[in-house]
Image (cartoon, rainbow over all chains, first blue to last red; front, side, top):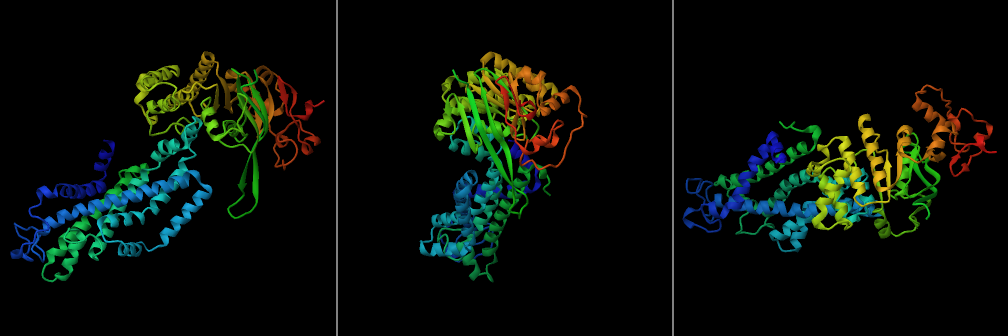
Amino acid sequence: MGMIRNIIRHKLALIGLIILIPMFLSALLAPIISPHNPVEPDMKQILSPPSIAHPFGTDTLGRDVFSRVMYGSRISLLVGFVSIGIAVMIGIVIGAISGYYGGMIDEVFMRFVDLMMCFPTFFLILAVIALLEPSIWNIMIVIGLTNWMGIARLVRAEILSIKNKEFVLAAKAQGFTEKRIIFNHVLPNSLTPVYVVATLGIGGAILTESALSFLGIGVQPPTPSWGNILTQAKDNIEVAWWLSLYPGLAIFLTVMGYNLLGEGLRDIFDPRRRYSGL
Amino acid sequence: MGPLLSVSELKKRYEVKKSLFSRDREIIRAVDSVSFDLKYGSTMGIVGESGSGKSTLARCILFLEKPDSGRVFFKDEDLMDVKKNELRSLRRDMQIIFQDPYSSLNPRKKVYETLSEPLLFHRIVGRDSVRERVIEILMDVGLNEDFIEKYPHEMSGGQRQRVAIGRALTTNPSLIVADEPVSSLDVSIQAQIVNLFLDIKEKTGISMLFVSHDLNIVRFISDDIMVMYKGMVVETGSKQEVFYNPLHPYTQMLIDSIKGDFFKKEVDYNTDISQGCPYFPRCSIRNDRCKKDTPVLIGDKDHKVLCFRYAN
């Protein structure tokens, strides 16, 4: 409860949350509240501008953009959470082992992190997706596999500072196994900055997915995703502005929401900067 | 029956780089050839100023830090030789209490979790009687059931230290190493915690190593006293002997200081002490020999001192 109160007191975080909550709801409730079937063409309504029946207008096949944007939010949410979830899991494991054991293991893992960071991530993703078939699962896995390095470094640094605290020595003195010491005592006290980075990372992952779908190697039509709605939009940008505006706005607001929330969490977790937002 | 704990020739040194880019390393002998025995049921007080190596010694004895060389026999097991798993199960029998009870308690665990974890991990009690046992332990350290749901930051320093003592008692150890357990507490609380230690000693007959820079507190609780300076034992013996008949000039200075003679002039030169007596630069009774030769502990089992003056 204290956490929620802190977010509400922090204006930036609150704005982020206010943006994100409708996004969550629309993703969750899309099948119930969307006015039209997002994949059903209506040849009589091709490229019709926003109206009461179609608040965001229709696309080149007469599909309702409002419903498609709503369903698109499910993809974005899924990609954001699953890919960052993968990144966080890899990052925590690598960072924890590296920080706790140090020495040779640390050296090997950190050089591997340096190596991974040298790859231009987006092109790596392009190459991998080109080899595998473009599917939402492949995208999520690849985004996850190319985003864990920052988290690993962060966790390692936190663990380095915590592993010599006396409560960790006390746990060692009690004869606990190393596994228990790491997972029960060290890790829970070093994850706070990970929440912040993960929240910020979700925004990035959503952008990457949109870009991939825009390029046609992401989520495949007819499944709507904000990126592939924009692909169609670019051909009709002179006659159908609504086709670019709304999915664009959706991406913008969602990423913005995660960034604000992430910034807010950073302030909230850092007692020296508490409540300084806005 | 031999001693509970027998330490011989224990050494630990650290290398410190003098500056970021220099290759020179200064070697700090944190613990330098320390030997002593601790009998079952007795308490040894280790005194010394900060930097004298007493905390490092405490941690090396428990193998929280690995000593460079020497032997530590605990219940006739050589800790240098035991395997990792055996050491882990031996740890049950030797516990530590740290100086700062805020950093020694996991900030994310309630008192109940802190105290029940070792009970469950070592299968000391069954799952259904854990809560009962935790409350018993809380009572033993002068707290009550209300503390079960508290986090460390919700308690005062004295209460936290009581929890830390309770945690050390959960596994019914034979040895407790208390590393400056009252130094970070208010003076009024210090007395309470020292009394708690005395109670526990009386009730359980536990053996203790009590590390402190305060000779006055050590005097209350110890049967024997060991005085350390620069990693070496400069004087050791029974409480009576060391306190009422101090032989080493450093011990004498410590005792004078608690009597209120703070302003006794100390002789302090920046002398190279890589050889000779470690106390040479500050010693008031030194002579030429102290500069060249390193003294060894001399005396009988009741009272030993590291000084040439008594070598006859």
